[in-house]
Length: 374
Image (cartoon, rainbow, N blue to C red; front, side, top):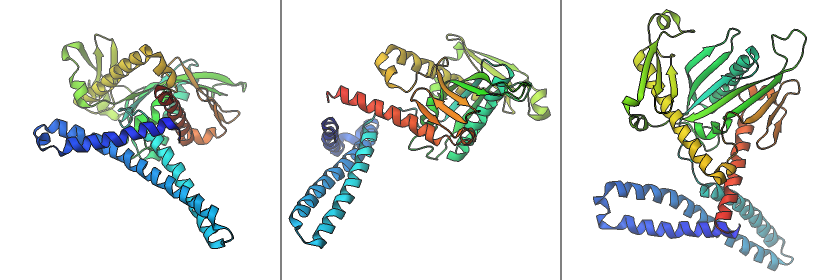
């Protein structure tokens, strides 16, 4: 293990002692918010310190096993015992080091939140709208594999069955989702430009066309965040919904469009059957978009932070190409190429998500090392 990691882990042990002292004070219960904050921190710190203690113990076990092997001589039983312990300790040390590295990385508080996935057709006309529908199918199939729930918030269908624009809410509930992340933690790297190369259904001469869609993934914020928005800053319009939904949806002005006047950000919802539910959902989308705008502005001000991320999430960034004739998906940010495009379009996104998360973790770890002077 690198020296800088040992230094960071030693700080956790010291902090654990400090927290245990603070929590043992008789007057701590008089300040319940502080008690709860310290208790939560202690839980996180203790988890790291416990694994670090186990790592150090297995290091000692490994050293003793090497000593045993060196002194075993011609004793076959002792040699076999020592080698077995060396293999066991080495394997556990590798696992513990990987876990400790992940635990030391800065956590994005939004990772565990539900997310809104916005897909918009770009260049390519009808083919782009059909690709938007394919992307929606890909994400909903992936959500099904993860045990997540999906719900279309708003949609603008195209004439051939695709989407000019569609917004879907993805909620992990109590499920774990991909890896150890929640919905937003797994999907956040999908933001950007997605390019498709294939023969469109409208192409009569078999020529390959290139079209594009843009995807934006937004973390859903708590209701408390929505309450912080000044109602006087909002303009709320109602209108008659269009698209599928039976007679009811087309006979009432149940669809809602909310405009945040200071920023010009707009959100709408027409999927629900009541104006009240649509208003609540549109407000959630609006809050998520405002939050994402703030996040992007902070990232832009911090060039070092922006470079450390897999992508800026800007829709102008071309992040991925889907080449159907070759059955190939290429993620340009991490030079990942997979020849399993049809499976991916059916929701088999695990390899892509895991690779993106691993890349960001490695970048964060490198920054952590630089910051520690290691």
